[in-house]
Length: 110
Image 1: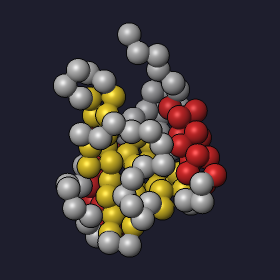
Image 2 (image 1 turned 135 degrees about the vertical axis):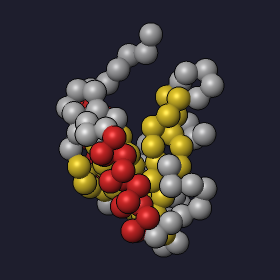
Image 3 (image 1 turned 90 degrees about the horizontal axis):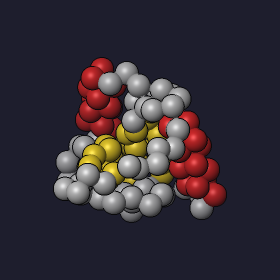
Image 4 (image 1 turned 60 degrees about the vertical axis):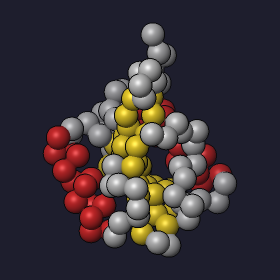
């Protein structure tokens, strides 16, 4: 059984970690305080990537590029976020300046 960190604590950690290493980060949308999921918007010079939470083949938490393998423009990313929030109104949306399109926190990528 996985220990579950409350969503608001994880959000605060991710934002502070990013800001502490000089990568500005903001909360775009506040989700459920205890168990909301996350979308992470990564902003780079070549466009935008939105990471979505997933599980790997062994059931461990992971992240996938919800907007596809290549960066997209802001309008495509915004539309993706909007669709996901309509499906799950408890989602948090965090935005990170990430020139390398890597999240500022430890993340298993699919």
